[in-house]
Image 1 (tube, rainbow, N blue to C red):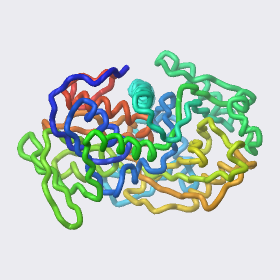
Image 2: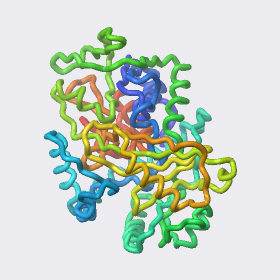
Image 3: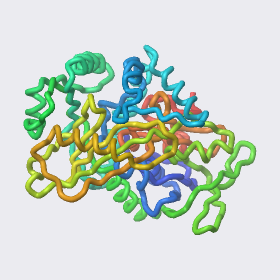
Image 4: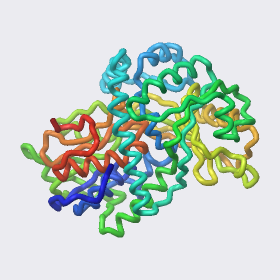
Amino acid sequence: MPGPPRATVVVKVIVLGAGVVGVTSAWYLAQDGHQVQVIDRQRDAALETSFANGGQISASHAEPWARPVMLSKLLRWLGREQAPLIFRPLLDAAQWEWALRFMFECLPGRFEANARELAGLALYSRQCLIDLRMNTAIQYDQIARGILQLCTDPKDFALLARHADTLRSSGIQREVRSAAQCLAIEPALRQSSLPLEGGIYAPLDESGDAHAFCVALRTLLEARQVEFLFNSEVVKLDCEADKVTGVQVRRNALSRSLAADAIVVALASHSNRLLAPAGIRLPVYPLKGYSVTLTLSAESAAKAPSVSLTDEAGKIVISRLGGRLRAAGTAELAGYDRDINVVRCAAIERRVKQFFPQLQFAGAPGLWAGLRPATPNNLPLIGRTRFKNLYLNTGHGTLGWTLACGSGRAIADIVGMRKPEVAYKFLGMA
């Protein structure tokens, strides 16, 4: 597991993007002694994809959406506005290409291979986060009580139980639990109006507020002289032969070019828009997701769940974040649209209240929609490009919070010309 920072050649590094992947990349680069500058178009860290995600660090559940059973489910979900995954056709070749590649990744054998890749990176990343927390005492409404995957359908339970057995050889700890055992793990479920068949418990997984984590880590980074340029839009890369010579940045209608020895692109779904003019096309497409944040009343705080939950049938996750419950899920392949669909948010809220009818909430729910940078096989793109000083750390899909620290540590290793400590198919490396 990660040890103390290793000696490396000190260079100036620009990190493009201040979401959870960008901020963690900056952290590990700064730990290695580099001069680091972070650029983001928002006014602070983690105000887009990382702002209101589901809160799970789900290392034991880091699996691709693309799997054989998904093809039949997609057919059943056609035309259903409340389906977990919706394809909204556009006149966009990139969308159709992504969809076709996703279906290919659903073929038998592909899921198993992709799941193995993700498992190693996810377990490594969880340990990196634990080490970071121990070394900094950073706080972000974290709870380390595991993740309980709930099944309300007996077929889902049987399938997940079989799958849990096959994963033990990969070092992933998943425990098959009966309905009664699920209630013992999370007593708040005793009032559920939904019938529980059983569940899969990952006791080593965690939850926490990714936005709070990023803001706290940004503060620590600024104390270490890392510079953040907010309200600054990255417009273009200036390229010559095999090198990026400058990053064009616009702020308040004024543009300037910034130079660095290395540039790390962590722009989530917008990475492709920046890189395509430079001749780099990534298999990354935005996968729109929703979340609902419910503030617990004073009376309900003691009755609310503290174990993070995954609802297998509804495809949503529920996490306790201090005095709030965050429920997130569903996915739409709908381009770069970030409008909030109140019907889908209402379905998420209704599902939460079915699990916890005894809880009372204060004020209106916080509704959010964000764009996850998804690859067809769910494997993030981390490593070198054909430009010798341009690196990628993007394409994490629904697992950005889970994989952020491991990805950040790995990209710092690669920039420092070291082999990362985790086995993964990093770009540009044999």
